[in-house]
Length: 158
Image 1 (tube, one colour):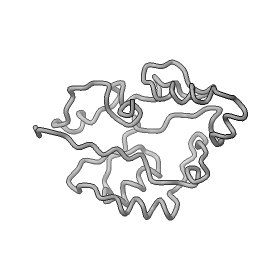
Image 2: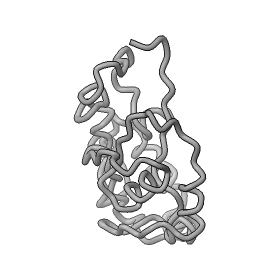
Image 3: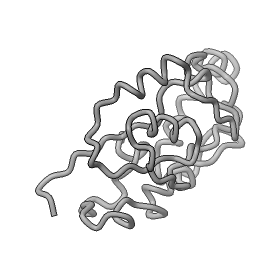
Image 4: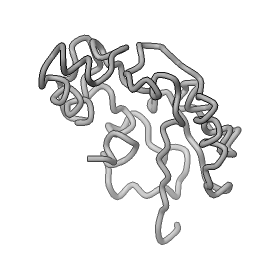
């Protein structure tokens, strides 16, 4: 087992919804923009690393362009549903709902929260990777498991 672990968390390079600063619609899987594809190509990651990706095309495209054409798609890494936020920018959401969108985003990022945007996946259901639905140690025996519940993107940022 290695003494330490370097973990690179990359969701995906920029897409058109990102450039428009809006939340994606359910099942929207926009490809990377030309600038996003170029950014993915410039990622300098160790080629010997294990790579896992969301099943979404934009995440797989990012991994492929970053030098990981055989990254394993893991459904537990899929993006949460944003409910009423889908298709809207932050400014549109604040204009329509006031301060509520901030609380919704905080709830989505909390793996124990039963809350989130109306019609969205609540925080506790949107983080299966952090709740034990999938962990890298299932695929790589050397992956440290000393901090259960502290893993992939939404949990690691808390």
